Image (cartoon, one colour):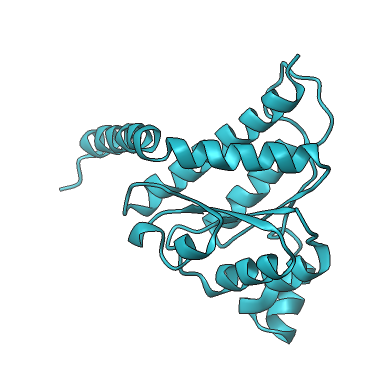
Length: 196
């Protein structure tokens, strides 16, 4: 029989354990990603984000944090960030006309420039449309940060410039790790650039 109290307690304990493992296993890659973002923003480049499902929602969330602000004690300018997951007309036209596997790559073709950063979010690390997006980003001489998870990062781990692999096989814990790391990347970027 389902035990609600045990489930809630276990879920919170698992989440905390994964966060501690992120601190232990992902510290260096989080620092590398932060350095890349700080450098790119300082040079006037923009951040594009893509992902599917819950990861698409994370893209929208993080793009907003970069664009508006995360740290409310900072008075800073906008950081150019676009979630490629939010335009339903674009996504449905692309899915219908050129195939869903090409929708993010097409947007990167149109919006990405040399030196911009693509943040791709994928729990499996194997989404075909994300793999094509990374390939197109490389063609455009963009840098790619992967927020990954299962299967030790999947196929994306090897093609991203920086792969932050959440140390879990549980989708919920991976997604929680992604948003935590995303917040860290945003806050480090804005604080290192704009904190007086």
